[in-house]
Length: 322
Image (cartoon, rainbow, N blue to C red):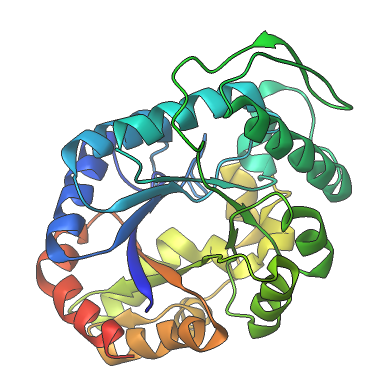
């Protein structure tokens, strides 16, 4: 069975609207909800970046059934892993066990703001290994002193630690990252429907049951041309791929990098318009690749309520039929 989720896109909506959308998404039947965790939007036109953890705390109280997750939090620069461990533990308690801590090695866009610089990818992954190991240790609730290559903790304890800790999902992109993170993570996060990635992950996990969590942007709307225009305005940064997206430092940088991306280029990668069968076909690639959990991103704040009221229910029926 595949679970289908809804994305709380903090880059494109205000905090109160995100909570309102979360409630509506639960009511319409989504199985889980994931939240991005950004300090800045990708593009100036998106216009938002509320604190994801405050929003998630409110969502935990406003909903009762859907699972919740970060997609994803970077615990290596902007946040110290000891702080991530504390707030993840609190979220697990507030949500009555519905929370998954999604972790990744981050983007320069969000992490450079502390003035600590932006390490090369190999170092970021080493830092993430150490951070995830430390978070696991703190989630035992034991008094912890830690002296690592990148992080230090002095007599720290998570006083409100949930029994069994918090499930960890870690973003991976290939065999090297799988080797690093499969021993540390309960679940996988990935952004492309790569069946080889899923097979390699399952092989690394062996007999341990693991979820594979993916995400896909869509831009539903009754007017296809308007939907394509919105996707181009709000999501053309997506065309750069993660090798580029991880390193650009500001929304202005993404504006420059995406200036030659055409609306038709965006429409080739993001299903736009009223055709729910086209959306289901795009999602089916993740199902066929072996993902167990797939979250949709409805592009743009304008029209979000209409999507949830008019399209989400029929779309879920089509997706469950896959």
